[in-house]
Image (cartoon, rainbow over all chains, first blue to last red; front, side, top):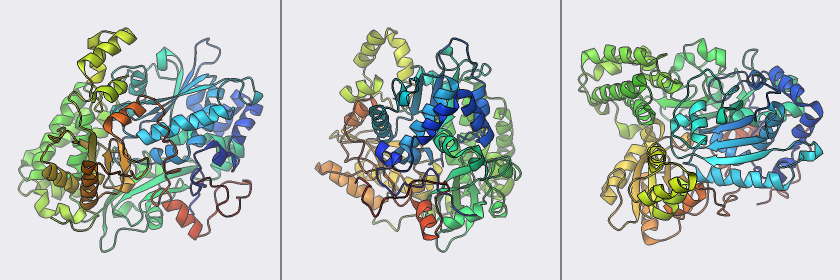
Length: 433
Length: 201
C-alpha cells in the first residue's frame, strides 16, 4: 500500500504551521464550504466520511457531534484533547507543531456544526513549545479573520482558548480533562451523563482528539466520499501512524487504515541492523502486545481486534530480541501506578500491587504464585475501575503472558538483566565511562 | 496561575497558594488540592534548570536509564533533588510523546530529542558554564522559571523557533513518499510554488 501524505503533505515547508503556509495549499477553503453547507449538513458529511476518533477509542466522530442537543439554550463547547501522554504515542505533538492551522480550521468547522461559540485546546503542560506554537497560531488565525466575530462574513463568531496542563496522564481521559480545564484536580467523572449532554461547566461538550479534528478541513473541502475512498469499510480514511523503537527510521508515516505492520515497518526501514523483531504494540502501552505472527494483520480498528489487540492511537512501538518483556511490562506498570489518580480502589491499590510484583519478577526474586496473582489482580481491575486508565493498566501483563510466559517464570529465579543485558537495547553507541 | 507562581518562586510556595486563593475566591486548601495533584507543580524550590529524563519503557530501554544513571552519578543527586550550587535539578519524567526520538530528555521542559550519555554530558557542561544550549525542537534553553512563565500563558516571542520543527523523524514518511514518487493523497491542490521561494524561513 502506498503512503498517503494528507495532514503531513507539506511538512517540508517550514512555515506549514502559519496561516500563510496553510493558505498556500488551499487552507481554510474547507471552512468557506462549511459555511455554505450549514451546520447540519456538516455533521452529516462528517458522519458519511466514516471518520472515527483518533484518540484511541475510535468512536464515530459525526455521531458524537450529533449527540449535542440543539436548541437547548445552553452554551455548547468543543474541547480538543491535546494531552498526548500515553507511552508510545507521539503523533499529536508533531501535528500540533506542524499542522497547527489544520487543527484550527477543523475546530472552527466543528464548533460551527455543534453551535459552539467557545472552543478550547487542552495541551499537556510538559510541552511548552507546543503551547507557545498554538497560542501564536491562534493569534494568526484571529488576525486573518478566521477567528473572532463574523468569520468570513458568515455571521458566526468563535473564540479559541489555548490551555496548558501541568503533568497528569489521567487528564487525557475526557471527563478528567474537563475537570482539569475547570481548574480542579483532574479526576474522572461518572458517565452517563456523557460530555455531549453535560460536559464543560455542565454544558453540552464535544471532546475530540487533535488528529480527529485536524482531518475535518480536508473532509469538508474534498468530501466524505474522498475520505472514505481510503481505508476499510469499518475503518475508513487515512491514519497518522508513528513508528518508534528498534527500527532504522522511526517517525511519522501517513497511510490508509488497513495497511499492515509489515508494510509500515518496511517504510520505517525495518528492524535495526543485526537484530530481529521480538514484539510490537499497535497503539500505545494500553493495548495488548503482538509478535511476528501478526505482522500481516490489517492496522485497522477491526483488524487489530481480530488478533486480540486494539488499534488504539496507531502509534506503533517495535522491540527487538535484546528487550526483556518483564522489564518492559514492569516499566509500563510503573507509569500507570504513578499516573493513577487515586479515585477508585481497584486502580489505586491494584497498580501499586501489580507494580511491586513485577519488580520482584524483574529482580529474579518473584514467587511461582506471583504469575497467577498478577492475572487475578488484572482481572480485578479490568472493567471494574472507574475509568479506562485502570483497564489500560490491566492490559499489558495478560497480553505479555500469552506470548512470553517463560520470561515471567524465569523471574522467579533469575534477574531479567542477566537474561537480557540492558546495554544491548540502548540505541546510542558505547559510552565513555 | 500555579504556573505563574512557579515562574516567580521556583515552586508552588505557601504564599503563592494564598495569593491564588485570594484572587480566585477559593480556600487555600482547595488550591493546595489542585497544586498537589499535578506532577509539574513542585513543593520544593527547583534549581535554575530542570533536567527531565524519560524513563518509560521506550526511552528508558533505548538509553534513558543509562542516561539517568550517568547524570545522577555525575551530579551526585537523586530524583527530585537539586545540586548544591542551585544550578540543576533532576527528575525522572513520564512519556514526553517523543517516542520516535528515544531516548528523550527535557531541559526546562524544552525538547532535547534523541539524546545519548555523551550528548547529555555536553548539555550539562554548557548549562553549568552558562553557555547557550539549543533545544532540538524549540528555542535556546532559558530557565525553569522562564518556561513556567510561558506555561502561565505569557507570550515569549519564541513561537517560530525552529520553523515547524519538522526534522528527519517528523518527515520520515513524507521523505519516503517523495523518494518513491507517491503524491499527496488530496485532489486539486493549487500548484506548489517553485523551489524554496515561499517557505518563509
